[in-house]
Length: 185
Image (cartoon, rainbow, N blue to C red; front, side, top):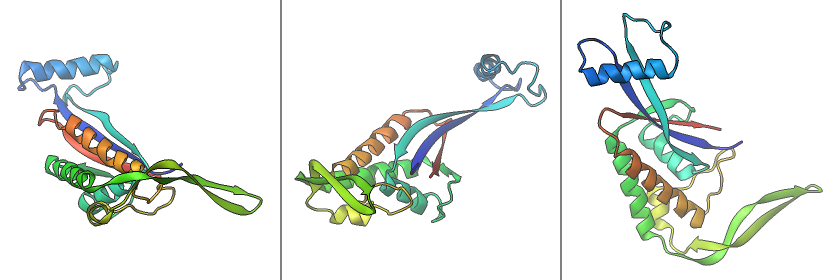
């Protein structure tokens, strides 16, 4: 249970005769691979290939960025188109925050336990941000139902680095790919 986030890459694949042979071959290969021969409508030979290209768990600051910049402020676990420019903007924002963070030794929140009606927070040795002003301005942590921690620490920084790495990887895909963001909790 908790905030799960996905970035998908999707490509339209056409098998129409007027398409270049390589595209028709790609469509035929998909039909064969999925055992759909005899089932697909031969009058409309087309498909969509969709792959999960990014996954985050409880990266609430990244999720809020998508809500604010892609979903028009609506946080409804829907599927939303994400443009390449938006991904570039998110990557640059992550890098700006990472470049501003200074992490030093400290106590990092590691969860909460409940016993005999008492709540106990747990901390472990780790790295915490000594300056979080830029993070709070550009990619603020967000509370939510099982959204994870809201501290500016090594886990927050790792989510930003993971995000930049995901975006670097997916932008290597050709321009025939579209991107979509989805969250659930």
